[in-house]
Image (cartoon, rainbow over all chains, first blue to last red; front, side):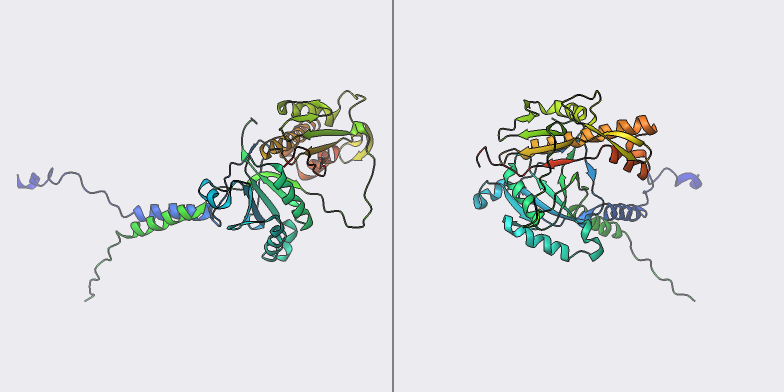
Length: 157
Length: 191
């Protein structure tokens, strides 16, 4: 009788957690590979317009971003609600764009400079005036490849 | 006699990995930049002669957007949803209408000598136009070109434009070159 006495006691055996670190590491590597570092904090309101004919931009290292829109609600006390341009981490004037483009171009590999693309992330409600000014400035800086950042939608509103 | 080394407790490895995972989740973004790619015209050289080539009226598709986000196409007010259809008709000019672009004989790979319509789209907007509508209009114009090219690819090669090899794509691009010209902006609506 004593032979069988032990069985049934002690309930369910504990599940081994030895493979848990491996699973987590796998997730970690997945995220490390698929994501990119967040470089700037966006200080303007940004609801990007929708478009159906969007194309993906191939290489992130070739892309410089210019954001435009009204400052975020929390920042409106300081900066007002007029649409503004954001370069890197700070608000900028239209005249700063040329220096920004030059600096971005300097950071690039010489062979890749002609492929440089400027991504314009502009809020839907912004008026075209500021966008036109920025585009004129980009033409002066000969940064002619641009990309209007949009969301992908199935049909236009 | 070999000494028995006690095993290192590895139960905290999972916690460390979790910590790293959460760090990467917070510090990185996943969104891929996507959008409408366009090319700006280069700034005219100062002192360079202005290129005042006259283009016939019938070859230009004029799209105007005013400060109140109203659209005028070829002199008529239009809803943005009809723009794609209208643009496609302009690009192709299927029934050789008088007021749509004329065609010229050109030599293109795979097509030999064909009559190619030579229309261009001219887009003009006001400083007060909203960016959302501007992008919608740009999108519709690009969509019209893409659809026209796709239809040509279907009838000529029996395949979608995207699935064609590069030289055939180039031939189709030469057939319907995407020319969207943006006029120098005007400021009529104030702002």
